[in-house]
Image (cartoon, rainbow, N blue to C red; front, side, top):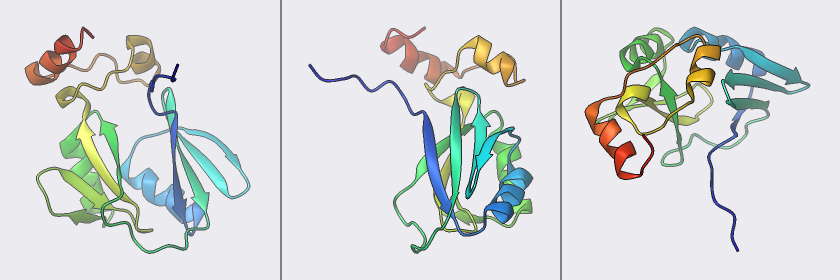
Length: 144
């Protein structure tokens, strides 16, 4: 018997300057700091988190990336531009942070990803509507 994938608990990103990374990500996204240990900081995303780890030495990521979910894609686009992020060409919103991490940003309402109402309330965002396409994807999987 094999285990079933249930989701992502956290993502670890390497940066070369932890304080600069906290400042930069704080310019772009609203988040609470979940905690810190020497050389690491944890950005809270409700029931998930991003672990920023000091010590990046590899070159920028080209294809390897992960996707973040936000409540407002256009606000994310504006904040990224204001912070001087390298916005990557394409049909969505992909960017490279100052340390070369390639990140894709998607809007909660447009995708099948869900958080429980309790988690959304605890995050201070309340109820977020879904597009009909996202609802159809959830219905097809029996998740509504």
